[in-house]
Image (cartoon, rainbow, N blue to C red):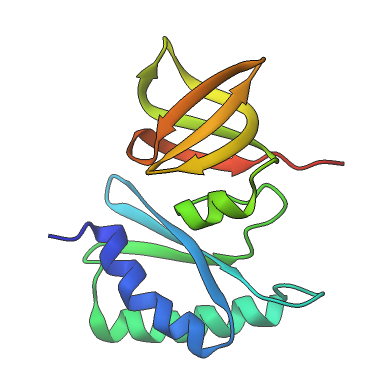
Length: 153
């Protein structure tokens, strides 16, 4: 059975694509009786995601969620661009940023730690290879709870 995030992704992705945007990823967070559905959209082109894109996606997704009713509790819908510190959700996204610095947190400690920050060396066979302080760490996608690019200024 698919997770709530997978169900929401399957429902939302076609709506976002129909509006000429890419569903970069989503977070479904619950705290008590309240939930937040945060949708990240991306768009090709120099200007990237605009406020108007976020508004259009928000209206359309909200309508679909009202009809399909996949979230039984009260929730807040947020739509935004991934930003400079964009979260990474899929192996393909990690692959786009090989050579960049990423910060990630694992679900359980690996080598005595859960937080890693280093250069993304490669994406191979269900794992990312990260160089942290000169040491290579191989982390499976399933062990990663959250990952973001570290912006360069």
